[in-house]
Image 1 (cartoon, rainbow, N blue to C red):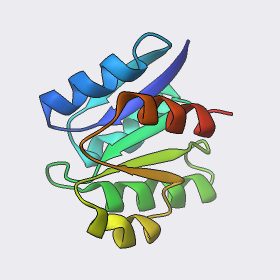
Image 2 (tube, rainbow, N blue to C red):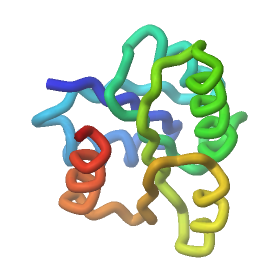
Image 3 (tube, rainbow, N blue to C red):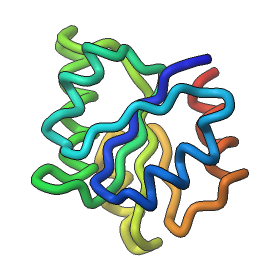
Image 4 (cartoon, helix red, strand yellow):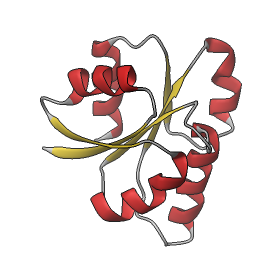
Length: 120
């Protein structure tokens, strides 16, 4: 089982991601974008899933931080999947350095496929 780190402050989203990925992955959660970098060092996940709206530091800023820290050698290279609120947010996702994104509401099969493609 590989570890997945999910950053969201929405309990319903945690439940959906855990239901979709929990059988084949250990899903770890943080509730703030600012906590993601520390959790990546601690958990060493194979995938980071970021909610677009996370408390005090959104998914776009968190994705940029993770990718910049990895390029600087301070974090391991980790694929990022960004969960968008609406299709209009795809422009933000394209600027975030995220490896992939999905638009909510989530489809469990689509989420599993996206995770699997990033975990290869």
